[in-house]
Amino acid sequence: MKDWFRKGAAKISLFSGMLMLPVLFAVFFSTVAADKPEATIDEESLQCLVCHSSHRYQITDTVSGETVTMKMHSELQIDPVEYKSATHGGFKCTDCHSADYNIHPHPVSTKFEANYNCMDCHGGDETYASFHFETIEEEYLKSIHATELGDEFTCWSCHNPHTYRLSDKMPGQLINRVARNNAACLTCHGNINNYAVLIEKELPDLIKSHDWLPNQSLHFRKVRCIDCHSANNDSIMVAHLVLPADQSVRNCVECHSTNSILMASLYKHQAVEKRSKLGFYNGVIMNEAYLIGANRNYYLNVASIVIFIMVLIGIAIHATLRYINRHRKHGN
Image 1: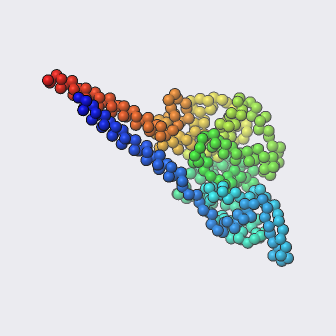
Image 2: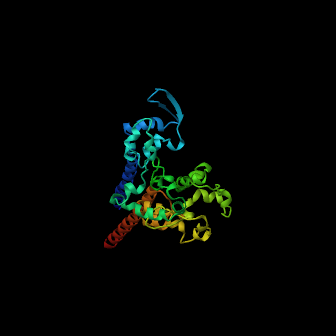
Image 3: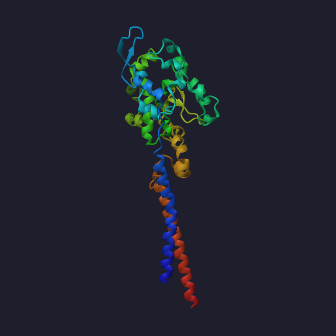
């Protein structure tokens, strides 16, 4: 009888080891995937960054030969590290700017060139159909930014083309994503100089205008501006229909309820992102809700399932062996 139990235990150990293989492979491939190389900057663009990555630059008068040092405007400064890891970091400068920019100093005519917007490249392109750029444009054109500021406000007013990354695809905690999204709003709404460039009004005091909000600092850290100041659209990941201030959310129940608007906006990113990784239960039903015994670690979830299966198999084998042993005794 002892031989039966030893053989049964050996089988359980072998089977459990086989079940752990997917977890080990998942850990390995996730480590390899994290080491993906970034885009490389071509030599032509590196020449542009000689000046545009510095606070000061030098230009030489082609007639007199005199060289002077000038300050680089902050809007024209580009961080090479950020550009390299940006969504458009693999592009050459002249993919978006005319070849006239290769002339130093740049001809005055370059100042009159129209900048590309998102739809110039992504509009009607099936490759990017999942992003629904056409819907984004429709939503934006109805927003307070477009109706009040017109051509003074463009995609690049919020999304710097040299540093923009799909923040909702970037790894990290949700609080970091909130900070990245809000930083785009605060570029104008938290900077008196940038605000004055766009609109001839006094910059509102954000603390005073949100003084009705309980636990104000906590809301600022945990919720994006657009979650309360825009209308949601299920077909796009991030809302672009920014509403006037008097139409923003001011009712606590709209967020702190079963049908929370945050579940359709802020948490929607993680639900879509985690659905394939964490499964339907963790990725969709639970989402960011806290339940005793729940966790946000994929590998711990897999390990717990494996252990649970092993326990069931162990119970089944134990019951089978007892059944066989009992029948043997009765047979004897």
